[in-house]
Length: 258
Image 1 (spheres, rainbow, N blue to C red):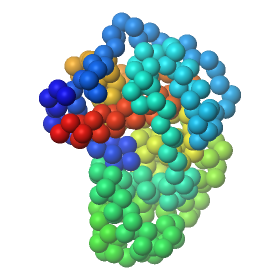
Image 2: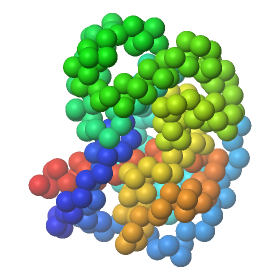
Image 3: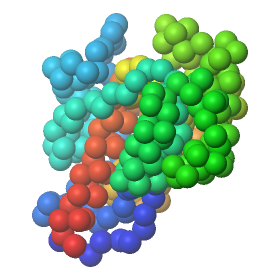
């Protein structure tokens, strides 16, 4: 396996993504940008991303029209869509996992669950801050999950209403709460509510996966990557799922070749 670059980035759910050579599993993966015209993906009324057959159909529709997703599909197949609780605990977990390795974040979150019993707004607000710190949560993260807990308790954030709202309406309600940024909102919609056309365009792991597949020298900045993602409507979330899966497979290949 070709020499591996040593850069490390922190991304989705705390997964560590590594910049690696484009020579993966013995095959050079490169897609020319000239072939990346906006895909013409069939319209969709509804998609249950937890249904493997429906997800596979959406991936095939993307791969048929887009060489980038086709390359990811050929490398990773159709990985299962991971789901989390569509409630306060799901949001708090996303906050806890940010910018940490999966292993470290899992250890911290496990301690939080032991401390609280059940992660609810009331439990978080009643918990001693030093006890939360002892679990491994940073002070900013504690402030964020407490802010979200206060919003839920006061009714300023209604997660049942968010679950029924359109993507844009749900994003707006979420980011109005201190502690919830656009990335957190997008990840919550994707993996706690199963939204298939949400695109976390500022995620480094996604833009790095795109760079690796296309062979481009630099990652797209967030605003440009948001425009790039337009070609994958109405399955932008599915495309993001495939890119995350691709870069995690690249990470595994790096470990295997170390």
